[in-house]
Image 1 (cartoon, rainbow, N blue to C red):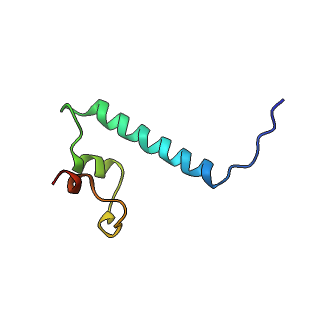
Image 2: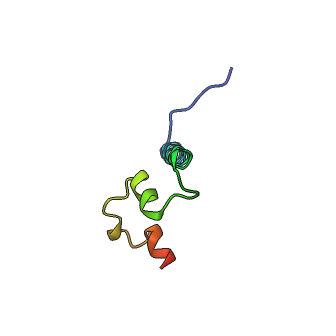
Image 3: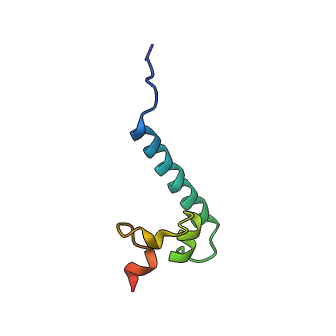
Length: 64
Protein backbone atom coordinates (compact mmCIF):
# COMPACT_ATOMS: atom_id res chain seq x y z
CA UNK A 1 0.00 0.00 0.00
CA UNK A 2 1.30 3.46 -0.92
CA UNK A 3 0.94 6.25 1.62
CA UNK A 4 -0.15 9.53 0.02
CA UNK A 5 1.16 12.73 1.48
CA UNK A 6 -0.80 15.94 1.83
CA UNK A 7 -0.59 18.13 -1.30
CA UNK A 8 2.12 20.75 -1.15
CA UNK A 9 2.50 24.04 -3.01
CA UNK A 10 4.31 22.38 -5.93
CA UNK A 11 1.45 19.91 -6.33
CA UNK A 12 -1.07 22.74 -6.40
CA UNK A 13 0.93 24.66 -9.02
CA UNK A 14 1.33 21.54 -11.16
CA UNK A 15 -2.40 20.83 -10.99
CA UNK A 16 -3.21 24.42 -11.95
CA UNK A 17 -0.84 24.20 -14.94
CA UNK A 18 -2.42 20.91 -16.04
CA UNK A 19 -5.88 22.47 -15.81
CA UNK A 20 -4.80 25.48 -17.91
CA UNK A 21 -3.25 23.20 -20.54
CA UNK A 22 -6.49 21.26 -20.65
CA UNK A 23 -8.49 24.45 -21.15
CA UNK A 24 -6.20 25.43 -24.04
CA UNK A 25 -6.56 21.98 -25.65
CA UNK A 26 -10.35 22.17 -25.40
CA UNK A 27 -10.36 25.66 -26.92
CA UNK A 28 -7.97 24.60 -29.69
CA UNK A 29 -10.07 21.57 -30.60
CA UNK A 30 -13.20 23.72 -30.78
CA UNK A 31 -11.54 26.50 -32.81
CA UNK A 32 -12.45 26.89 -36.45
CA UNK A 33 -9.07 28.27 -37.42
CA UNK A 34 -5.76 26.41 -37.53
CA UNK A 35 -4.32 28.21 -34.47
CA UNK A 36 -5.72 30.11 -31.53
CA UNK A 37 -5.13 33.83 -31.76
CA UNK A 38 -3.09 35.45 -28.99
CA UNK A 39 -6.24 37.26 -27.85
CA UNK A 40 -8.19 33.97 -27.69
CA UNK A 41 -5.37 32.35 -25.68
CA UNK A 42 -5.48 35.26 -23.24
CA UNK A 43 -9.26 34.90 -23.01
CA UNK A 44 -9.08 31.14 -22.36
CA UNK A 45 -6.38 31.61 -19.71
CA UNK A 46 -8.33 34.53 -18.19
CA UNK A 47 -5.35 36.89 -18.35
CA UNK A 48 -7.16 40.06 -17.31
CA UNK A 49 -4.81 42.74 -16.11
CA UNK A 50 -1.69 40.88 -17.20
CA UNK A 51 -0.26 44.17 -18.43
CA UNK A 52 0.94 44.78 -14.87
CA UNK A 53 2.92 41.52 -14.89
CA UNK A 54 6.27 42.66 -16.26
CA UNK A 55 7.69 39.13 -16.14
CA UNK A 56 4.81 37.57 -18.10
CA UNK A 57 4.29 39.43 -21.39
CA UNK A 58 1.10 38.95 -23.39
CA UNK A 59 1.32 36.60 -26.34
CA UNK A 60 0.54 39.39 -28.81
CA UNK A 61 3.39 41.56 -27.45
CA UNK A 62 5.96 38.89 -28.34
CA UNK A 63 4.91 38.81 -31.98
CA UNK A 64 5.01 42.57 -32.43
